[in-house]
Amino acid sequence: MNFIIFGPPGAGKGTQAKRLEEKYNSRQLSTGDMLRAECESGSDLGQILKAILDGGQLVPDDVMIELVAHAIEDEACAGGFILDGFPRTLPQAEALDEMLNKAGKQIEHVIVLEVDDGVLLDRIKARAAETGGARSDDNEETLKKRLDVYHEQTAPVLPFYEAKGLLRKVDGMAPIDEVTQQINAAMGSKAAA
Ligand code: ADP
Image 1: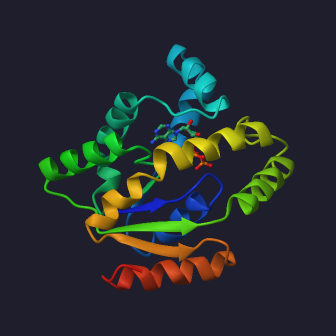
Image 2: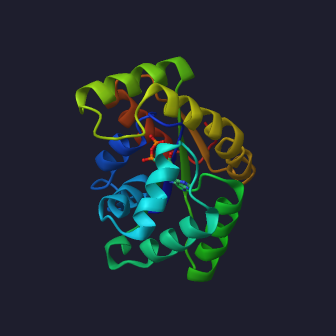
């Protein structure tokens, strides 16, 4: 099954995607993880990407679209994929549609984790403290930027999927297990939540 986990920074997309991989025989494709791996490689591209990530900005659409187009063709995604962090702009959503159409594939659900901005800020502060600042974009200043970018550029993707009847809204502020249960329930229904 192919589906998208959608939501603001710190909503728990990665946590939930990892829990869903086995049940749905689908591979998590985290664009954030892919980008961070490239940053850590120390390549020239990695250095450019690191500056973008640390600034809380988005990586250009053409770079992201090419990255995801390759990733979904990988053998590891034969059973399906869970997109975590993509699409993040309307052009990315449109490009995804196009690449899936060509491949004869489709997205079956878009799970939206809804979390208030204040809660996100608290979570990211906690994550930064727990991991000793392992993610250099997990600080208050960059998070505020990432939240602005989410509201301005990423949230407008929601009506695109709503029009297709694919949106399933889930309370991302519930305890982790409950969020997983809500997602499983939403995946079983075709009705917009
Ligand atoms: P979070 O959801 O907590 O913001 P991610 O790991 O998904 O974290 O993304 C981290 C950063 O990677 C983003 O702030 C952005 O700079 C970059 N990024 C990830 N996915 C995309 C994308 N689809 N388009 C543009 N930039 C992206």
